Image 1 (cartoon, rainbow, N blue to C red):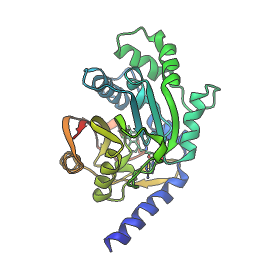
Image 2: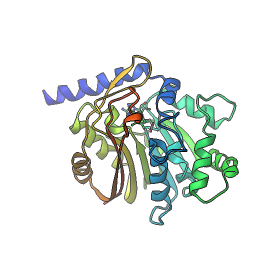
Image 3: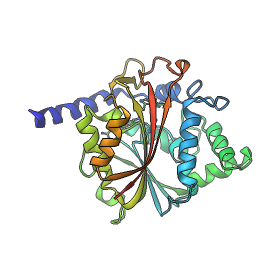
Length: 273
Ligand SMILES: Nc1ncnc2c1ncn2[C@@H]1O[C@H](CN(CCC[C@H]2CNCc3c2ccc(Cl)c3Cl)CC[C@H](N)C(=O)O)[C@@H](O)[C@H]1O
């Protein structure tokens, strides 16, 4: 039964994603209040601060950074693009890969203005906000490709997507728990993406705590496996990672805007043994 359950759960999840609407999704999660750069307790500034610190404290280095389950968003790699000279973006859906290509080709084909994000990360880096145009150019220069990914496959990426030694660093934000029918699938997926990472490479993982669903578009209700910190730590250990740091953000009431039932967000920096 377990085997059958595994196939049905993952197939059912893929079916839920068919209605995913990048424009609506960006509106729900990447505009105020969840993306309010004037508020210290807004979710996006908290995520950007975690990622900035993780990429700039000196231990993360190498050639290739891979973002797993990028969705239609770029915030995940705004700090990493200054540290790695190759960045690979990935997603399960063509509509999301298309959204990212729209930004990359800079022909006004995307559904969110990333300027405030670029300016905010420049400020974190001690640069003047007007340096955002240089950061945008840097990002367009280092993104080598935008490719399909499926974290439920033992090989989540096409074999020719990565060099044989693997990626030097993985970042993945709100993907694994949002695509896994249960904790076992979440842990398996963590193991699958770990195989893309070289030994000694870093994993930067952001995810939702205590979430059971979210809306990927109007009426597009997507189930999420509710996680707590202990389960995240146990899954990391079971999948061959050593935890360096875990940080937790608890949503203030006004960040709960009806697009999901998430209660907290975790940030993990870990090393693959
Ligand atoms: N088999 C599969 N294999 C691989 N990838 C798959 C699979 N199936 C589907 N995907 C792809 O995963 C991506 C999940 N995606 C949305 C969930 C986040 C959402 C819900 N939870 C709370 C919360 C959210 C967002 C912001 C905030 Cl603040 C909060 Cl709190 C993350 C996108 C981006 N990384 C982001 O950070 O917004 C999506 O792009 C699928 O196409």
